[in-house]
Image (tube, rainbow, N blue to C red; front, side, top):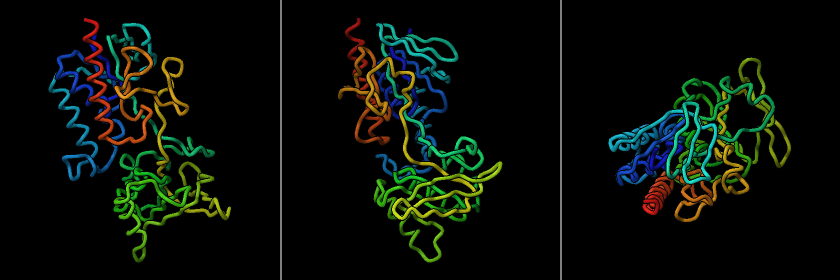
Length: 308
C-alpha cells in the first residue's frame, strides 16, 4: 500500500514525486515509456528558469535523478484499468495491480495524426511525430513539417543542419508559436537560397510512395490549388490529445478529453488529482506542469492528513 501513486513521469509527475517524497510519503511512479514524457524528446529548451539552454533529455534526467535521490519507486509499465472511486485507489498495469490512498494523474498527451489515407502505413517509413527522435534518419533529405505551434517551429531549427530542404506547412496564415523562435525560422526562410520554405493556408491531402514515403500532395485552402512535393519524411506536429481514454467513464472530462480540476488540482473524485498537460487549462508549458505537480502534491498531503 502506497500513500500516493503518480501515473505519468513527465515534469508534473516528477515534481509531484519530489514534493511528496520530501514530505516523507511512500510514493510509486508508474510510467509506460521514459521519464520526462514529451519533454524528454524536446531537442532544446530555452524558457525554463535557471537554464539558458538545456536539452529535454538532460532536464528530464535531472528531475528523475532528484526524485530517485529521495527514494522514489518506479514501475515501467502500461496502465490497463483504473479503479479509483473508492477510498483505496487501484491501478492495474501489465505488471500487476498497485494500491494507494491517493493518486495523481499526470498522463500527458499524445500526438494528433494528420488523418489522411495511408498515414499509419508510412509510420516509421517516412511519417514521424518526433523530429528529435527520427531526424537523423533524414540527413541531406527533403522533409516537411506540419503544424503552427512551438513544436513545429522548434522542429525546423532542429532539422536545419540535418535536412537538405524543409517545407513548413501550416493550415492558417499565422503561427501560434513563441515569437522569438518563430523569428529565427522566418529569418532563415528569407535568407538567400533558403532551405526552409513556409507554406501557409495549406494542408496535406495525400501521402504517396511504395514501401517508403516518396511525396506529399499539398492543397492551398484559399486557391484550392494542389502541388506535389518530393518528400522523404514528414514530421507531424499539429498538437496533442490527452491520454484519458481509460478514464472516460471514470472521471469528469471536458469535451476534448482533458481532466477537469479546481485550482488545487482536485478532480470530482475524492483523493484523485490531475496535473500537467492532461488537465484542462489555458497554458501547457514545462513550468506550468511543474507548478501543477507541486500544487497537486500539497493537496495530496493535506488529504492524507485527514485520513490519519
